[in-house]
Length: 321
Image (cartoon, rainbow, N blue to C red; front, side, top):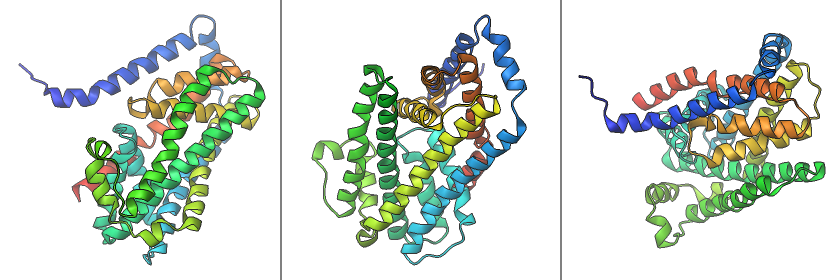
């Protein structure tokens, strides 16, 4: 008789749930008359636009590597940008496979930098600035998305409520990180939460003079925002590949709102959640359901499924080392 350990099974439950939700979304969106249209759209996607989408995604990895390179260069550690591209893929895989507010991918990066001989103070400084700039760019992108939706007249409580809940939390993360990196302490109840105390201890090792460099944080925030723009641009290009001419601004808003709901969930990669919100928000800007689903699924192939294999290999290599 084969026994499955409960601990191992528990790791796969979110994946099963997410895949089931994804299948349900696809079945609902392609119900009856839209099945043929959905299949035809996928079969006739223009290859040239798919190549453009692939280049945009490669740009996200290079931009992410540039963030790490820029921070470590500020700490007098000079390495070529190609040495950090693999870290981005490994971090992406861990963040998608184990969504713990970005901590799983961050731990991989710390291990990788340690293995490369980067002093702990410099690596923790890079982590602080990466997280601060990420959440600062995320908050800015969500704010821009809400403005776009408001101008279009589609801002409803269903859209505004999650954003209003998330925005203060996202804005509080950079403040808390900078506070801790100065050697300050957080409230006792907060430090007693799982993972918080060891994270505070580690972040306290960051070099304060670099982690509080306003100009460096601003430039890294710009790079993080560029990554969001490249991802949204990939979704926009997928619509073009399917023969739809859509304004880029509403597509950016659709992407950010879908990303917001994906972030608030605990399902790996937001499987099913991202797809359903993306199809619904694209429908609000006039994209047919079949086309919205086809574009979203193509987008997820490039941003979620294709990076999984190299990300897994790189993550295993870093953890074994």
